[in-house]
Each structure stands twice: as structure tokens, then as C-alpha cells.
Amino acid sequence: MIRCCEQCAGAYPIGMWLSALLICMLVIAWRRWRRMEWAGRAGMVAACVALLGGLIATSYLRGTTGSAGGICGTCFMAVSSAPAATPSTQPIAAVVAVTSQPPVESTLSESSPDVTVFYFHRTVRCHSCLQIEEWARQAIETHFGGELAGGVIAWRPVNIEEPGNEHFEKDYELTTQSLVLVRMRDGQPTEWKNLKSVWEFLGDYAAMTEYVRSELSAFLYNINGM
Image (cartoon, rainbow, N blue to C red; front, side, top):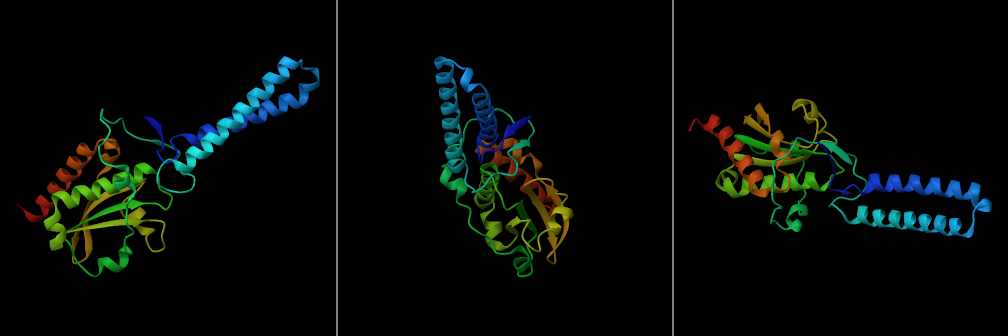
């Protein structure tokens, strides 16, 4: 299934099509203007004005949709078919309020958690990417607050495009933004699991939370032997 990225809500490709149509209309008008009757000229002007208005509208939409600036580098992305879901009741403000995290390399040496939960992303981020990160963080804080406080679990968002983080893409075979559970021993990874199904639960907060909770519980169960 192909769907447009939520950062621009499809405004970028729509804007490209409108630009192409406007150019075509202007070329036609330039070549045939003298041979057109007044009705044809009026229609051509109206069409050009409508296309121009559409371009202005999509430009505004691209500037207000999503929560990251710039043009999304993945305006169309392939995702698995997701189950039917009702829109989340979580406020959008909570989705985009992602605080900056300290560099990963410096923090790994300071503690040795049993499990580190990484969320790997790139510099240019769409609304879906930010939503997955925030919902995963909320699920972990809600259901594993004691483990977080006790240092059993660590939460680490990582920008793999920052200097020094490029190796993560190869280490964990990353192909897109990913939530990865990593078993740690003496500060070093020994086993990992990519929770690829997080993309299937976009728009379903309850299903996303339960998926993260159950997967992390299973990962901890194997570690602790409970």
C-alpha cells in the first residue's frame, strides 16, 4: 500500500502537478492568444488564476501540516496495510513535543541497562515519524516506569545522520525510521529486535501502546528469566 507522508499531507506532489499544468496553460495561451475569442481568453485566464490559487494553497498547507520544517524526503512511502483504527484521542501537541536527547555515544558509557530501546530517525522528519517516537516513549514510561527509574531499561532516540551515529544503520540493518530493542551486557549490544510493525499502528494509540508493551515485556522476560 502506498500512502503520502503526513508531513506535507500530499501537498508537495499536488503542488508539482499544479505547477506543470500552469506552465502548460501559459504556453498554450502564449501560442494561441491572438486566435482566441474573448470567451476563450476569459476561460484561459480563469484557469490560470485557479491553478495559481491552488499553488498558493498547497504552499500554505506544506508550511502548516506536520511538525517538521522543510520538504519531506519521503513524500510517498510504502507501508504495510494497517488494521482499521479509530483516530487517537491523544492531543497533537503531545505528538510533536519531543525533547532533544544527549548524544548516544556519551550516554552509553555512563550506564549499563539490561535493555536499551532505540528509536532511529533521520534529520528531516515527518509527522508519522514523530508520532511513533512519542507514542513508543509514552508506552515505555507508562508500563515500565520502574524499570526506567532503576536503570533496567534505557530510552534512546538517535539521529543516524549525526556524526558518529552512521554505524547504527549497518549495525541494525535499518531501512527506515525504526524502533529497536537491544539487549546490553557491560554496555555492549548482544542481541536486538526491530519492532517493524509500529508502522502498522499509526493512528491507533491503544494498539501501538499494547504492541510496544507486549514486545518489550517478552524481551525482558527472556533476559530476566521470569
